[in-house]
Each structure stands twice: as structure tokens, then as C-alpha cells.
Length: 258
Image (cartoon, rainbow, N blue to C red; front, side, top):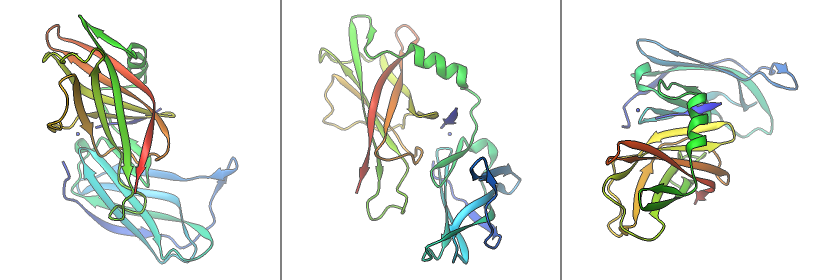
């Protein structure tokens, strides 16, 4: 199970980009042996991507990245991209100034290649799923979870779109004001065998938000989809009893904005 986890944008530079000439891919079980090695050094994080698919007319590999809240999103592209054929190259580079203890998850072209999380494992994820309910009852209050997730493909966005953003709402089912002792602390987004785990951002809700709703947002998620369905779980804290709860919303559609 792949876990996408969360630690704002930090300055870093790509250096020592190297690649091999076009070669034939190594076939294994009917597919290509596409491997990524991640190594942290005193300079930064070193990436080696074997059998990276490029256009057969490529003369360079362009590498760009963003690094926000512990999420390193890397985009690799062989250029120019005009030929109607592909080949394979081994590409390596270093992203300077990024330390291992600052990185939670690394994506290359939307695919997760590295994750570090010392707080969560598959057994814990299974327990969270078991505890998550469709309707959460705390004392005399009853709640539902609503969620909206999207990826931005507007013209100013990268060609492969911006990372996922998720807004979660905890909604009082009887439209009563949500008690001050109730808060939302963390979200879990599930897609196939992958998980995006993130603390909510410290952002003020919209002034027009009704008192029977809590709103929290998570940014800089993975580049899954869009046009897919995910399941969302929110971790809820009751400061009155010092207890945590989990509430879920299944089958949430990830929107593509253009």
C-alpha cells in the first residue's frame, strides 16, 4: 500500500541532470522495468530514474519541481517532443537543499516513488478504516462529512496539472451550531492502493460559512486523476473528552478545473 503523507514552499535547485542516449527498454513479465532510486546526501536528494520513457527525438531531459509542506512534486520531460515514437533513458539529477527529515513524500510525474512516515502504517490504516463511520455521533450532536477535491488544469498550470486540493466540511445533521470543543485535525484520501495523509492547513474559513459547518482544507496533494473517485476520512477531536473519532465520505469525484 502506498502512503502519501504530510511536513511551506522551500527554495531548492536542480543540478547535475544527466541522461543516457536512447536505448531499448528492459522487458519483464510483459512490461518495462521502470525503477526509481532515491538517495539523500549532504547536498540534497539524488534521483535516478531507470528506463524513463522519452520521445525518440529527445536531446534533453527537463526537470522541474515544487516542494511544499514536505511534498516533493517532480516533473520530468524529454524534449523536444515531436517524434511519433518513444525510447528509454536512464536519467539522474540532484535537487539541492532538501534534507531527508524535511521530506514526507516524493512524486515523479504524478507517481509516488518515496514516502516516509513514522506515525502510520498499514495496520493503523486498517484500524482507521474500521473506526470511520458515515454518521458520527458525539453526545447529543450528529455529523456528516462532505468533501470537494480538484486538480487545476487552467492555462497557467503545468501541462500535467497542479497537485490535488481537498476541502472537507463537517456538517451538523440537524443544522445546529457545532460546539467549540469539536475540531477537524487530519484527512486521509484513499485511491486504489494509495493514500494521501495530510494535516489540515491553518486557513480561516469563508466568512459566509454557516455555524452548522466546520471547513478545513489540505493542499499540495498527489497528482492522481482527475476524473476519478476517492474515499475521504476526516479525523475529529473532541477537546471536552480528549477523544478522537473518524468520519468518512465514500465515492468523492476529483474534479478537473480548466
